[in-house]
Amino acid sequence: MQTLCSWFILNEELHSYPAFHSDEGGQKKKLPSHRDIQSTLVRIQDKPPSFLGSREWIGSYEICLCFDALYDVYAFIQRLAS
Image 1 (cartoon, rainbow, N blue to C red):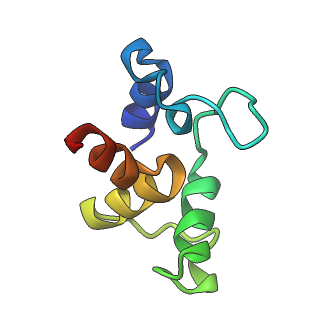
Image 2: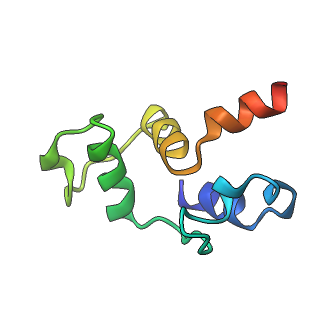
C-alpha cells in the first residue's frame, strides 16, 4: 500500500487533482505510516480501536478503503468519467 501511495503522491499526471499530492492545508502529502493506515481504518470504522498498534494484516479491501479515505479516489474516478 505504501508503494502505491508513493506513486499517487509523486505522479505528475495526477497533480491536477489536489487530493493526491497535498493535504487540506496545501502541504505536500507524506507517505502514510503503518500507524496512519491503522488510524484511518479505525477512523472510518472498518476496524475496532484495538486494531491500532496491532500486528494484524490488512487485505485488498481495506487497502481500497484507505485509498478512498486518504486520496478521495472515488471522487477522482467520477471526475474522470464525466
